[in-house]
Image (cartoon, rainbow, N blue to C red; front, side, top):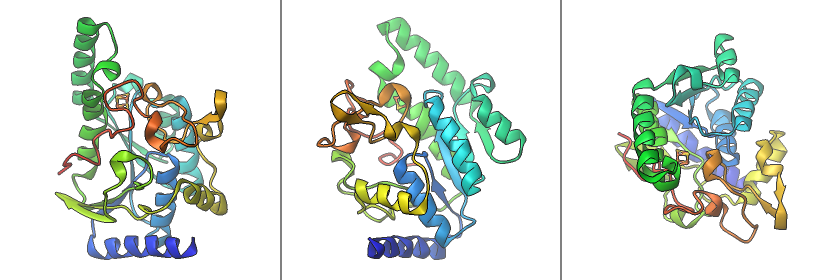
Length: 256
Ligand code: SF4
């Protein structure tokens, strides 16, 4: 494992050397946390940004502020939301100068309008009938905003997470560079690394559901369900929709 860690650090080191304007993305899932720790060991001042949505569980916002404080991340949160929809815990920490929330209000208006149209037409939520569009507005668009001033970003993507992640490279170029330093790590290696570093996991990972199912890939609340250990980690994402086990789009669409 030590060899893998050193290799991952080398990837970040090279990226930091090659790209002055570089940041690390953090969803506050297990893979993101491992990536942030690694990246900050190489470059302690590397900016950290996070794309949050109004559908993230409350536990994610609580964990975000806890980790932000514990690790001194000074995270910048990008969120498509109305002012009133920003969780109080984020606002409090922003007032204390611990983090920054960048609200994308125009997109929030568009999202509200499209959500209302979908509900009227189908009697269901937008994430149930049009999850690609929901992710486009709540995740991909804010991700574009988050990376617009950078030449490279570092992600916690891993190629054993699921069927859609098998063919990525450790460094990719698509408008800007994307650096995937823990690409070859397994789920167990990520958990082991965080345990050694003494970084607690998001509390949803320790919930055990009937049949021994667990949350193994963490996203928005309506689109995250527990899965068996023998399933792919991302099998519980968007279950029951056309994009089950798939991607929100920030790794598949051009951001710049
Ligand atoms: S994960 Fe689900 S709720 Fe979140 S943006 Fe995508 S479709 Fe919408």
